[in-house]
Amino acid sequence: QVQLVESRGGLVQAAGSLRLSCVVSGGPMGTYAMAWFRQSPGREREFVACISWSSDSTFYSDSVKGRFTISRDNTKNSMYLQMNNLKPDDTAIYYCAAHPITWPAQRDYEYDYWGQGTQVTVSS
Image 1 (cartoon, rainbow, N blue to C red):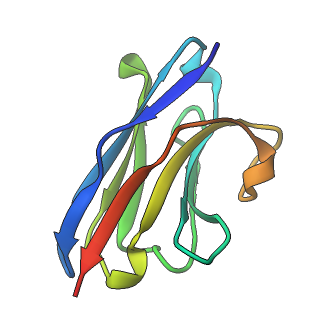
Image 2: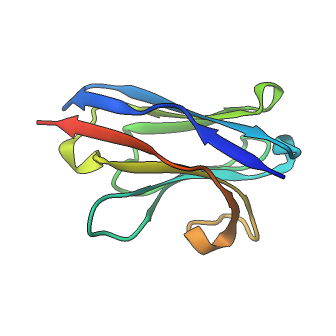
């Protein structure tokens, strides 16, 4: 059974940085494209970024482009999200996802596996 576990998020001040990680177990992570999504109260889950299995292709939402960087290390079964210049609007529960049915995939229903989510709070 494939499991995805995000690292603990946290509270950070605006303009600060935070790095999230997602560890995959129970499946061949090196063959999966993966992604980060987020959901804030009262809003639908939204796409943040995705990365191909080989890291040669990445996509970002307009709201995070230039501030966030998605990466992965298949030797460690891990994916990362480096978040810089954080804004209060980035406050959300962040989820990692894996194994989309298509590529590129920016819709949550396109992903088969999900982590439990981790809270990121950005204070102004």
